Image (tube, rainbow, N blue to C red):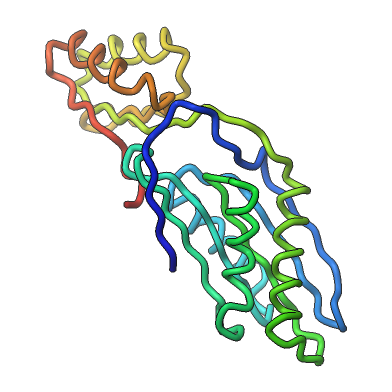
Length: 215
């Protein structure tokens, strides 16, 4: 595992536009690269689990991701060789994400062993190439960094909260249980203002905070 830190910024970040997949063979081994956007550690880990479930008979499913956490102030980086020789799989995949300056992205490279050992250098080239192809298949875009804002409130204030989120043009989900829980994704540079507006409009009755970003 590798971790890196950085200051939050309102500048656009580069990430993948959606899911991407590509495959190729090297000396009989099949390498399949999978890439997807991930705004949280939970989303990244869920994608890794999904690929592993889809390829349970693979020799290896190698993951790597870079995701902003802690309200965008920390860049979490992760990679694993998944029983390949040390430094031959996860690190080359993560290096591609770093070199392309991609964030909020997860990749998994699936390998089906073909009977010929590739050596550390050959494996590194193959895992790096699979990551590049998956990213290219997904496409790269610029996005304004976002952070989750979670609001829990009584039903009496739920209409006010919903109205504010809609007026701010935010995508959100609402869960109506004993109380109402809203989770909205807010451009990072606007998050404090949105939180203040929600607290003010409900006279402090709404519980307003950041979402669980898997820190």
